[in-house]
Length: 100
Image 1 (cartoon, rainbow, N blue to C red):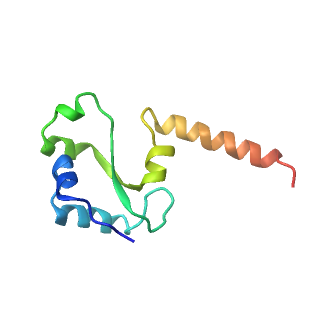
Image 2: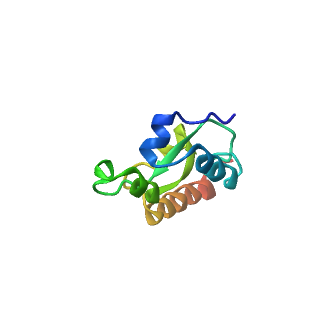
């Protein structure tokens, strides 16, 4: 269920519709985290000054496309590979000791 972004959203991120389609297709048309076919949103790095950048520069900080849930819950501002690995280790340790 791929819903194309509005022209305003494409302009905000510096993408043409064709570039957006190519990026989503390269990702398999699914959310990069949950791998489900859901409406996708731009996921971008929250770098300092992002809102003041011209769209063609903002485009460089787009990481990919996620469903809204994963974008807000699993990849919030401040998420780093190290923190996410720590979270995975934490959950895996619990699953090992969890009663069956």
